[in-house]
Length: 487
Image 1 (cartoon, rainbow, N blue to C red):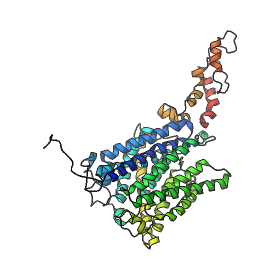
Image 2 (cartoon, rainbow, N blue to C red; image 1 turned 180 degrees about the vertical axis):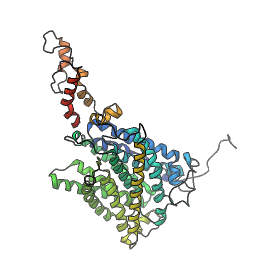
Image 3 (cartoon, rainbow, N blue to C red; image 1 turned 120 degrees about the vertical axis):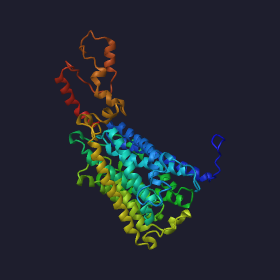
Image 4 (cartoon, rainbow, N blue to C red; image 1 turned 135 degrees about the horizontal axis):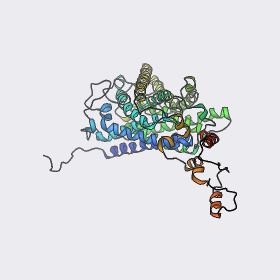
């Protein structure tokens, strides 16, 4: 009877609930980590927009997950479905307790963070030329028709990959390959950045790249280890596997870059660490520790050279999503086929699997290959269809115009700047120079002279005689074009 004060009688293991909630919270740390990483890799005039798009992708993911995403990916009443769940858990309907050692809503919250990370990775495809509103629309549709089905394939008990025995511990398919292929296809439809605006291009803030990588590594430790959902031996083993793969991946990439440049690249070090972490995502709970050491080396080598793929295919994958997430995810899944061990998989005390070649399960390799092909193919085709449809809707064109690209995404899409001096340099005459007076005139007030000389860090400029004329505006634009491009 309603209104009498209902009391829940289910009891759960408190340590398990705390483990899941802590894991979900630390996985969320990866979102700002991605934002800082992407922002540092871009030019300063588009730095803030990448932080915005990553955070907004997370908002879209959480809304979609609550709305119907969880139901489509993990509905408990869809056990006989092979491809996708149903809408029985729409709006988290009846997603409360359950008969596990943890309440179902705790599991739903943890899995929600995986979608947040996936969509945030894809958001990097907008770098320096993608409009933000159309991308948010794209992400909501993408999460519904791409992420949820693939998550169901591998993680839901009724999914065809789950039942077939494919090994994917924490999301080599639904997180890494899916986000990489989607981002690459999205970059193809955006088109290349304009060559004349890429003069002296380089990451504008390597310290921010390092900060972002550190936050990602921190969150990744629980991303992989908390996938066990209970604190057990397998979760600790996944924790150590993740670290070993990241360490050897970072060392390997850095050494390869040193071979070419004779410099110890910080960006190269961070790139290698990320590749090692990505490769550990599907494998950290399946393979042996020494295999993770080899895996990091292989992922560092393969992914470093895979950065050339975008040039061969003529796709401006600005942040190397395909190389660092897609190829590394494939490496991790293939290491499951070769080095997965039944005794590692069984460390949680509940999962039985024959492992891979290491424990004489030779059939595992074709299952892993088929899974990789299915995820990549389905993602590429459906992403392309979504991009074509959205781009044709009035007001939802995917790319900014040339003026917006030249000015930067911060000005064109956000109206704010990561660094205020970008705006000050750009609008110097409108902000600080008195163009109505002759600065060399002896009648100029001492206050005006003081204001003029305050900006010691700005280069000396000569004020135009008539700043309102269109010809002088054009001349000033040409003078500043190099500065805009370098920003």
